[in-house]
Length: 201
Image (tube, rainbow, N blue to C red; front, side, top):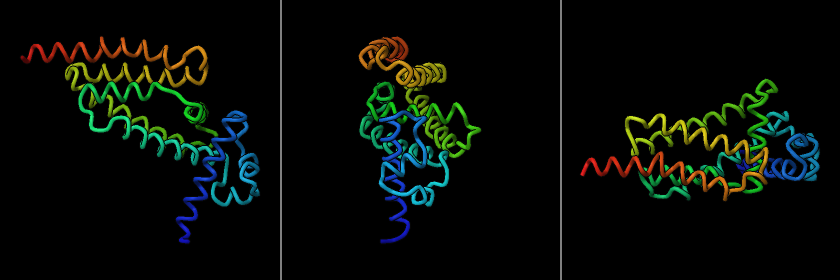
């Protein structure tokens, strides 16, 4: 088996084990030793592929990025304009047990970049910057003049939701969030798009 394929497989195994440890015991419990024990391997085996806890976190978030890319592509499909913007926003404001773990890892990374989390932080910035660009593209279909403000509001709403979904998941279930989100989308996106279409007609 080519070395690069073997490395990719090992990194994927380590990422899944990292997520499992975080899900069972919390992100504070994610250590090289804990992940090694989860895999039934030695710590030296883990450090051969990820030399530090910071790299362990970055590797797990690489798995998250790959998963987010696949899920977003499936969710948005061929949608365009405001429908694509609404679908993106709804998708970002949903949760699952594994998603909550990824968000917890993300919060830890941005809370303490100085702990050697540079690679993970820049990975996350790449993801979030691209997400904002997608919001901006969709917002232009609703109102070109106010597109940036619309994108800002939706982006910040989703980011705030992601924090609350970790901080207080019982208090902010998907049903509650989606109800307020639909109101926001109607006022901020769909009503504007309808008004613009009426003027154009």
